[in-house]
Amino acid sequence: MDASSRDEIVEVFDALRADLDRLCGLSFDVFTTPERLRALERLECEARRLRSAQHGLINQLGAQASAQELGGTLRSALADRLRITKTEASRRIDEAEDLGVRRALTGEPLAPQLAATAAGQRQGLIGEGHIKIIRSFFAHLPAEVDVFTRLAAEADLAGKARGYRPDELAKYSQRLMGVLHPDGDFSEDERARQRGIILGAQQFDGMSRLSGLITPELRAAIEALVAKLAAPGACNPDDEIPVVDATPDEEAARRDHRSQSQRNHDAFLAGLRALFASGELGQHNGLPVSIVVTTTLTDLEAATGKALTAGGTLVPISDVIRWAGHAHHYLAIFDQAKSLALYHTKRLASPAQRIMLYARDRGCTKPGCDAPAYHSQVHHIRGWAATRRTDIDDLALACGPDNRLAEQGWTTRTNARGETEWIPPPHLDRGQPRTNTFHHPEKLLHPEDDDEDGEGERAAS
Image (cartoon, rainbow, N blue to C red; front, side):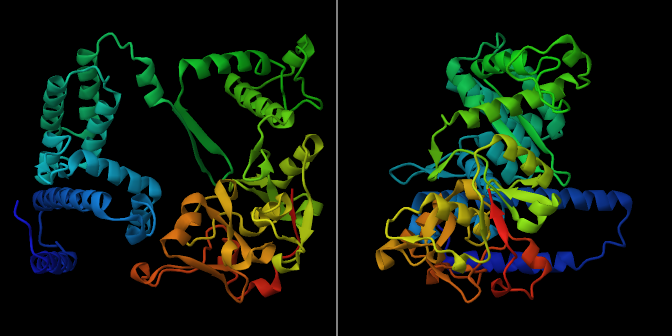
C-alpha cells in the first residue's frame, strides 16, 4: 500500500465523522424488521473494520514513539488519551501485535501474525469475540506444534469465525485443540505460561471474587494447608478462641456448620495471618509487610463505619478492632498533613511519613490513576534535587510509572488546598484534570469543602 498524504488522511477522517453525524441523526422509523436487522449487521461489520486501522496506528506508536513523546509507556498513553482502562489498553496493544501490519528491521511490510484472522476483521466478518477465542487458542497451543500446522489451524479457525458465533467457535476450537494435542501433557514451560491468580474488584457488599489457574506445585501446597487449617472445627471464626495450632476435638468439629468452601476461605486467612505475624516477609516500600488501615477517629471510637486499607479495600470497623487483638500495628492521629512535624534531610521517607501518606493520599496522586498506596512510591513534589529535604508537606504518593514521569517533562506542585497537582509538558497538555479524586470519592459529595476545613481527625494503623 502506498503511503498516504496527511491531507488525504485528514480528509478521510473528516468525511467519516460527517457521515457518522448523519447516521446518528437518523430515526430508522421507516424500516421493517428485516431491514433493521440488516442495518444492525452492516453497522457491526463497519465497526469491526475500524479496529484494523487502530492496529496499524498502535503498532506505529509502539515502534516509533519515544517515552517522552508519549508521556510514559504506550499502555499508559493509550489509556489516558482514549480514556480506557490500562487493562483494555494492554489488550489492544497485544491484539495489534497479532493482527496489525508489521515492518521488518529493513522497513519492508510484514503480514500480521494471524493473517487470516486479520483479513476477516478488515472485511468486517470477524468480531472481537471471535478474535479473543482465536488468540486464546494459540496462547494455549504448545510451542512444539510446527509452523505449518499453526498456519493451517489459524486459517481454519478464521474461516469458521466468518460463519459462527464466538461461543460456537469456542467449542470448535476445543475440539481442534484435542486433535492437534490429543495427549494433553503440557510441558513445564506451558504450565508456567498459563499460571495466574486474579483478585477481582470489590463488590458493593464488600466481597471479592478470586479466580485463576494454579500450577501443580501451588495445588500441592494448598492441599497441605487446607488439610490442617480447613479441617472441621479448625480456624472457626464462630468460636470464641478458634482452634489453629492444635487438632480440633469432636466437640469443635460438631459445632462447625461451615461448608468446605467456607472452611477453605478461613484456612487461607489463618495461614496469611500466621505469615504476617512471623515477620519473615521483609519490607515493602519501606514498611514491614502488613495490613495498613486508615479510618476516622470518630468511627474507630464508635465501632461503626468502614476503614480503608492501603490496597484500596473497604473493611468494616468491627474487623479492624478484631485485628488489633493479634497484630503489630501503628497508630497516628492528625488533623491535616501540614500539622505533622515529620521532616528530615534523608532522601528516603521514614516509615512514619509513609504511613501518614497512606492515610492522606490513599494512592497515586496523578489524575486518573487508581493505583492504591501499597503499589505507590513516595514522590518528592518539588524534587529532591531542589530541596535536599524530605518534608511531609512536600511529599505525595505516586505509582512507579507515574513517579518516573519527571524524567519525561512532567512537574508537580502543591496547590492552595494542599492537593498535589500534576502538570504535563506542553505537547501533552489537553486541559486534563490536574488533581486526582479517585481515592477521595467523599470529596465529590461535598465539592464546597476544601482541605483547609480538614477531614476530621484520622487514625492510621
